Image (cartoon, rainbow, N blue to C red; front, side, top):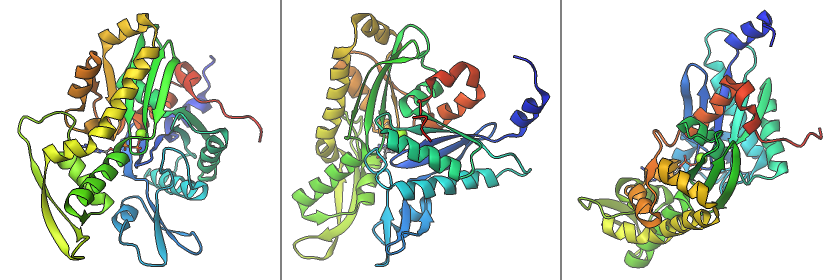
Length: 351
Ligand code: ADP
Ligand code: MG
């Protein structure tokens, strides 16, 4: 390709942004800077006008505490975009903030956004439009597992097979790649959120104690596990006793929590097993070499990789910094566009 000085200068100064539009967290990666935004995918809106009042960290802090005229929304709740307009506004807010962070005035950014692999044409279009409305010069979409695999350095564009299991908030996705293409993929709506609900239900059924979703998530993060711990732990929770109606504090053990979330954990593992059954034997043999890569916040559940390794007889390992893989991988596409752009999701060309 001929050297074009104008392109070179534009490329040097332009802002290349990779975004992970997750059900639980939205992350923004900027070239040469790394992750500049990492906030919960929550928006608090005015109930009547649907006008956003708070986004991200600020919005999540309001969850369960909103005054009567406001409502806290997770626009991507189940791995799909359930609230188009709010998703658009959230995206615009984050892109704008990333753009404003540069000291010198730079051209409008190029953006690659990771979306759950099951999104529909309409949803893809909505994300694309949102990015363009937010001021992007160009916008592209990539399937989240593909972005993660790139960031992790899995050999997805080579001939051998590799597998990535991304456990997020709303969905878990199991994807097997070979030669830059998807060999087989499964997505299920059991992931981190479902475990939070399991804990909430468990505490309610066993102790008649009603705790909030955020408290349940905190319990999972502190003492949740998928495999017996070297030293079992406890943590305390606060809630409202459903019989007396009064506040109560309670100690929970990691053994109880492991039992509470065991159904969800098993469902995820069974999906990995089912996916492996569909994979041709040559690829199974490749996987026995490279192992199964775990990514997403859910992969941080203690003992999960050991448990999967035990059950499927292939070594499972957690990606480095598993919660930022999608954003970093999306950013890599722009850095090596010629070589990697074939991995982008096609968009319906109708305008
Ligand atoms: P998404 O891609 O859907 O936005 P993330 O990859 O950001 O999701 O992961 C969010 C999920 O990971 C949440 O359910 C959160 O509770 C869970 N999570 C984060 N840290 C941990 C941890 N240390 N142990 C278990 N689960 C965790
Ligand atoms: Mg994700």
